[in-house]
Image (cartoon, rainbow, N blue to C red; front, side, top):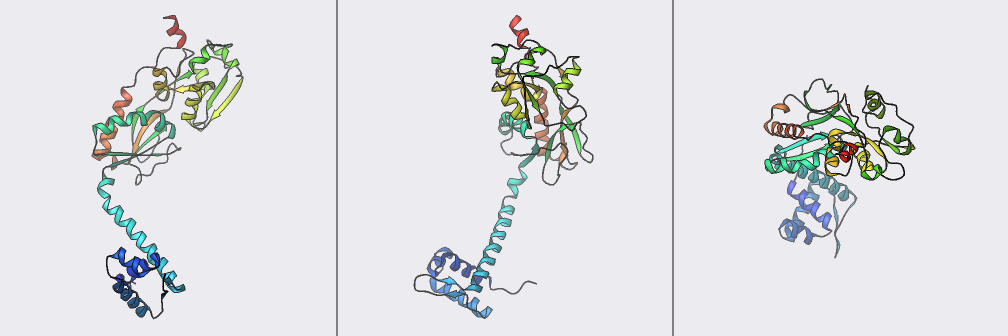
Length: 314
C-alpha cells in the first residue's frame, strides 16, 4: 500500500539532511530557504515527530530523521537508475552484446572490430567474456561465440571457422645452442601447454597433434601450463617456449613474424568456433549484420605461412 506521501516535502528533507543546511538544500532545489524550512516542517507535522536538530551553523537529522533520510536517498537512487535505463533504451537497442572466450576476444576479435565500427557507426558492440563453452543466456547476450563441438540445444548454431593445430615459437628459438629443426629438438626446449579445453574428448593438445602425425613427443626440458589461450600465445611470442598454436589465434602473429612455425606437421582440430544465439535474436537485423560481418572476416583469413625451415630453403 502506498500512502499519500508528501513527496515534495520528502525531497526537501533529504536535501537538507545531505547538505546539513537549509541554505544548501535551497540552492540545490532552486527555491527559497524559507520554502525548504516550511516543507520540512510540513513533513514533521505529518509524521508527528521532529526530524531535524536545528543549529546556528548546521542542521543535523534526529535519529528518526537519519533513518528517513537514508530511506529517501536509497529510493531516489533506485528511481534515478530506472529512469536512466529508460532514457538509454534507444542506445541499448543499438548495442550488440557479444559473449566469447577471453583469448578469442583479445587475440582475434578486438583487432578486427574497427572494420565493423566503420561499416556500422550507428551500432555499438559490447563484449563480455565467458570461460565456458556452452553457457549462454539469451536474455543477456545477443550472440555467443563458442568453441567446441557445436552442441548447444535450444539455440540457433552456425559454424564460424575451424582450426589447424601447428607448433609455433619465437624466431629466436630457431637458433642458439639447441636450434629447433625437428620434433626431437623439443627435448631441449620448454613445452607450453594450453590447459583451456581438457574436458573435450579430443582436446587440441600436443598429444593429439603428435598422434595425428604419427610422431613421438620427446620429454621436454620443461613444461609451462597456462589456462587461457592469450597467455599461451604471448608466452610463445616472448620466447618462453614452443606452443601448439590454434590457427585463427596465431595467424596474425605468424603473418607479422612475431611467431614462426618450426615444423611442417599440422593437425586438423576436431573443435570449431560457433555462432550461438536464441531463435528470436538470430532474426534481429543488428545481429544479422554482425553475424554476416564476422563470418566474412573468418572466411578472409589467409593460409598459414610456410614453416620456417621451408621458407629458409626457398
